[in-house]
Amino acid sequence: MDNIKEMIQPLLQWYQWNKRDLPWRRTKDPYAIWVSEIMLQQTRVEAVKPYYARFLETLPTVKDLAEADEETILKLWEGLGYYSRVRNMQKAAIQIMEEYQGHFPADYKKLLSLKGIGPYTAGAVGSIAFDLPVPAVDGNVLRVMSRLTADASDISLQTTKKEWEERLTAIMPEKESGNLNQALMELGATICVPNGTPRCELCPVRKHCEGYRKGDPQRYPVKAEKKARTQEYLNVFFCVYEDKIAVHKRPAKGLLSSLWELPNSGREVPVPAALQEIGILEAEIFSMKNQKHIFTHIEWYMDCYYIKVSKKTSSELVWLTKTDAETSFALPSAFRKIWQEGLSKMEN
Ligand code: SF4
Image 1 (cartoon, rainbow, N blue to C red):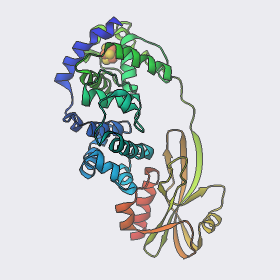
Image 2 (cartoon, rainbow, N blue to C red):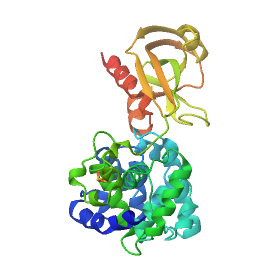
Image 3 (cartoon, rainbow, N blue to C red):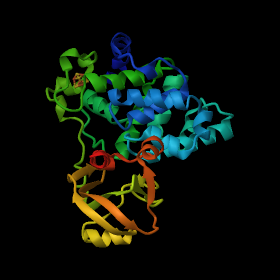
Image 4 (tube, rainbow, N blue to C red):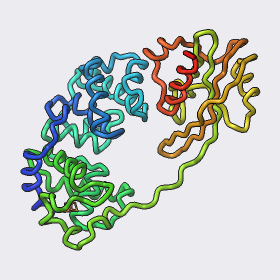
């Protein structure tokens, strides 16, 4: 435990001088910090910046988010993936409006009770916005702490995470908890990096680092092998009738639930039969580039087709103009390349 305590001051000092100037570090507004934290769980800092700016410009307050329609929030999230996160954000915003008169509660347990807010997010928002002495333990922090203490516990286990939350809670300073959490994240992002060799020669806590002292910090963290992803093989259709394109709403449960998609079917169903099933009676069929998309637990291998429809019947498909689709409907990234190729085919 001692070497963890000893790292606090040098780490805070280093952070003060070396932190990157990021938009969400210029505010104490819990709403803005929350938005940034959820987005940062999805993708890299540079990719988050435009999403963050657009989100706060469109929905600057908790109230705006609580009252927004679903298509707006999905559109703002388009390309970030994990749409359930932004749906949960809206549910939490409604909770904040109803239970806390529109103000984020400055209390760790109350933050944890909000939809979609787990220990990491509650810790980040609580410490950064309200200086609550609570840690924010994510993969970055687990890596740094495992190296600092040469701890070989498996960080993919919830118990390991919980232990680190307890150990860090015990050393959280009364003031500057937000800075300490951000300093750990910053160290993990810029010095004690996940891929490649950690930059120990630049590290402000090298003197206190057991992993470094033992000569092989990259041995840590220990992480169990992930299960292989399931592979699914699909035919995907970019269907055009006059100047309209067909989209379809996915089921309310499961992968990409309730989001729009390009019509598709399992590859075991022949293409003409699959088209009949979705109400396309006569059409010319052209091949497009095959695509692959990787989700957390599933890989999609997609054979793609441009379908020039001449006769159709009513079905679950919704037919949209290009402008409607581009401005008001969020299409998951899995279909984005097919969409772009389909649009350019339409123009030729
Ligand atoms: S000394 Fe190296 S391994 Fe230890 S915390 Fe710093 S960068 Fe990470």
